[in-house]
Length: 168
Image 1 (cartoon, rainbow, N blue to C red):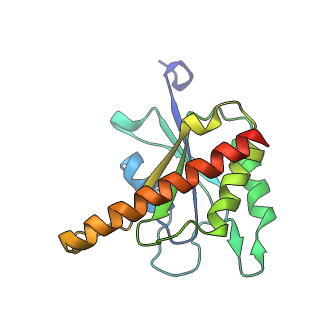
Image 2: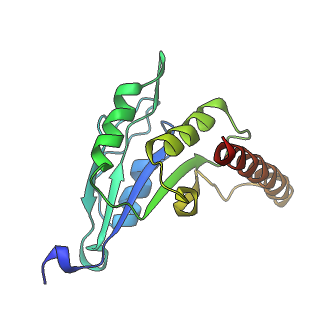
């Protein structure tokens, strides 16, 4: 059977530099195709995608560069991402977020705006998944409980923001 005959899952990974988009993409595909770095600078320069192998051969993941550079939001990268997925029927957008970032920052609000504006599909937010990255198991139970409360507050704040975007 040709690859066109298979039911395919196509995912777009977005998030801030260093939040683990490429690592997550490699994990999903079960192969190392995206360049990963521990540096503060983005390893991914252009949006691009790959299919997995074996039981993941029907999964296509698009990794993306940072949306923000030293001078602010990088419109060139945003346009590159939109062009890369323009003719791709995405089934989901995966928003990676560093678990250790405790607030809903302006950069994330801009990423939400890019999704809303770049993918003007009714109900697009039903196909967005937040994946917390950089979760380490060295935290005390007390810290974990505190983080749960902060993440709940974050969830409420992002839902409120998204509802306001839908009204606009």
